[in-house]
Image (cartoon, rainbow, N blue to C red; front, top):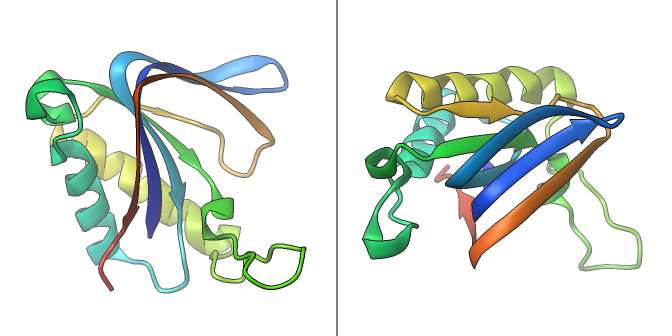
Length: 143
């Protein structure tokens, strides 16, 4: 599992001009990609890491601040463009595999106490954000 994590002051995701998820910061915007074979271990690791990672000022975590988290499914975080001019996304799991894993990460975060806003899985989404910092990290779950 791969997550691109941005510390934000605010973020929203829209589909066809309608906001489907938004947070007011400070908070985290998470672009979440699922790869083949991701399961419960990766779900647990990723949710806990997002909730407890000290990304905010004064080395505080989302859990300490009660920061909201906007999670957007994003298969393109597994894009590969080392060769040629056309990227491939072979490492990204298909929707039938990744959607339940995406839902599980969101649910696990909620179970840890997070307020979670979501994008719409598989939709053409427009994401708007105001970075705080900016602070952006790539998290790859251990295999």
